[in-house]
Image 1 (cartoon, helix red, strand yellow):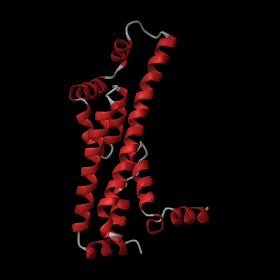
Image 2 (cartoon, rainbow, N blue to C red; image 1 turned 90 degrees about the vertical axis):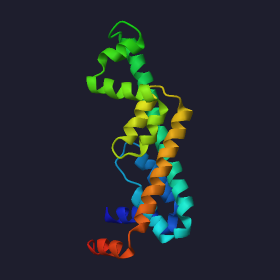
Image 3 (cartoon, rainbow, N blue to C red; image 1 turned 135 degrees about the horizontal axis):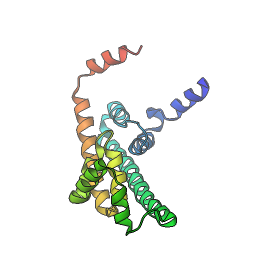
Image 4 (cartoon, rainbow, N blue to C red; image 1 turned 180 degrees about the vertical axis):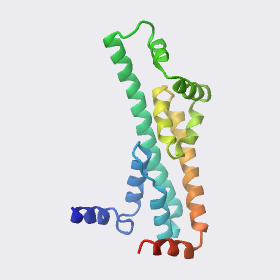
Length: 183
């Protein structure tokens, strides 16, 4: 088992694989799996400072694609839910009326908020713990994919620029002290 883990770490090591590893980590972290991509982006930029913009753009692309996968999953989940409700005739009324009757009060608040503001809400898709479900709810609410894509891209790009820049301003001595804790 240890050999398999070592092989996996070697396979995705940043110096050997570089930007494809950053892309893959950013893509996976944007799905509903709990994984942060900022450490990988920061590590890569720290090793190759001249690659700041390519790394940020690659990470943004991977993260946005992951966000659109969440959007698509929400979109398809709603279609499946509606088909299930129709098939089993669980209640009368239109699909939207049936769905509204079954929503918990908290969901009404979130759905109403997102319906009121529309795709620009997805500029918050970069937020940890909230961003990925926002993307899925955007798909569930049938928000148009192009504006969703645009707002997700803006939010995620700004996040990578700000986070990576802020981490680069921290002195190297701090990072050496932090790494010494793991030795």
